[in-house]
Length: 215
Image 1: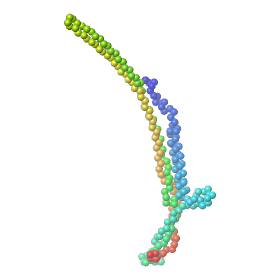
Image 2: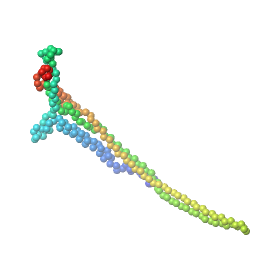
Image 3: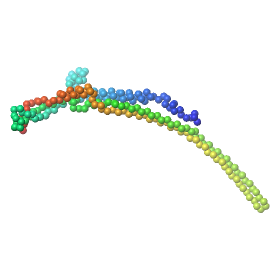
Image 4: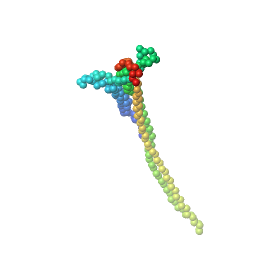
């Protein structure tokens, strides 16, 4: 029955390929914009103080957030020979580090988008028909001579059964895979970080004192 078979090419007509392929790509583009905005928001909130002037429209006018570390370190006493008592002194120093220099700036970006569309059409048809026919025959015959007599009966039947089936199976698969990873900070931000690192140097906040005097 060729007329009942599914035309395979007709199954693919009218598919919204623009939406099936372009939809995930547009979504990936929008996600990339949101990821970049998240990085910018992180730098603005974590790296900078709120504007001192409430009417300021510049979100970066408040200055850079810093973390202050105070500690003591040994220094040599130039007036005393090394190894002699009092040759080692201690000074208290302060280290002011920009917060962005000691935290990881998130920089996720979408590096790969795979759109896979598989459509499988299976078609097998057979008309399901059931026909039962039956015919029977009954006959009786008697034969005899004198005291001998015989009777014969004949019974016969013929039956037939015919059945055909018809089935159809259609299936489709749609798979979208998006891969995002942290590619590290951009080169411009890396250079800014290098400049900030040069400012991470301890400075003395008091005169050096002999070690024995601190006991």
